[in-house]
Length: 214
Image (cartoon, rainbow, N blue to C red; front, top):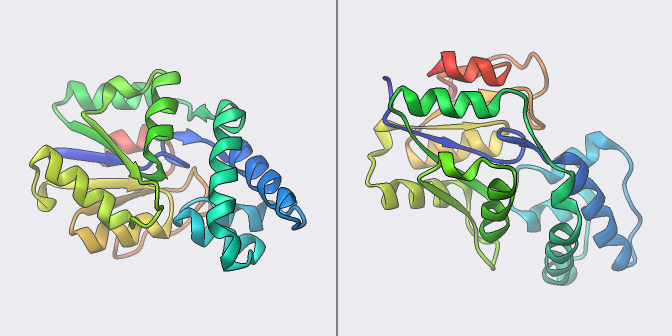
């Protein structure tokens, strides 16, 4: 085993949550008097960064409306958007395989933590993880903050942990927190066939390849 702990991102790594996220984001801005965005390439920017950055990047939302937008988004997503998610094919088997090989597993996500816990429980994945850490009410935590919270709670050194994620924000968070990084290109952030760079110890093209990367 190269690591003791594998920390998984949620959106775009464990689950395909794009349909619910895109629909909820559009519903939110419509309520605030903005136009919906239909371009999926533009909407994909909504997955990865902290949510307050997403509303600016995708819709150029006025900063004075961000707090209200986040409140609306969380209500709408909890009401309907989360049910449009689905675990990626083979992820259940991958998690079970890693646990059988002795890996400790955790989730580190920028999704609102109570929602992340509820969703992983609803889809039968929560039991694989020792802890699930996510964003707080203020949405001010960075990916590195969340990874560091996982390491602190579980008492694992950064050198003994690896983050698995699908975006440059995951890669940056891994670097800032001092953990290794395995990228996946089946999610939203890295396009299919994205080349491995120096910040990645591996690049997995499928959930099956996550197993072999570890």
